[in-house]
Image 1: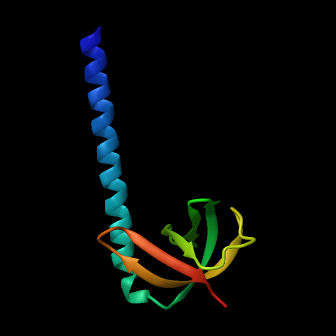
Image 2 (image 1 turned 90 degrees about the horizontal axis):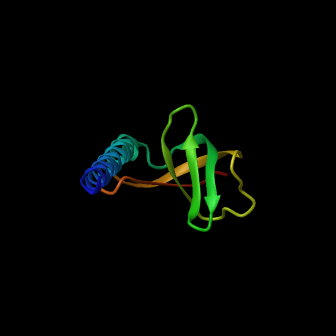
Length: 100
């Protein structure tokens, strides 16, 4: 039984690592795709708001990024306009600010 438990733990860790790489590849591709659009504005919905930051997803494009700057009063589900300010395809980072 201990051998099976070790094997199961190993498989779980490998799956978690593969999922992490898959997520990073998706974020990197999105950041690369958006790079020529820096400065443009988009419709977005807030998907996360907490101590670690505020996150938005573009509508209808399923691309997510961090909302920088003034995020006071912004809550999950809020719809707003955002402006793309930077991307870092190597790290999969996409940063927006509120537009207007």
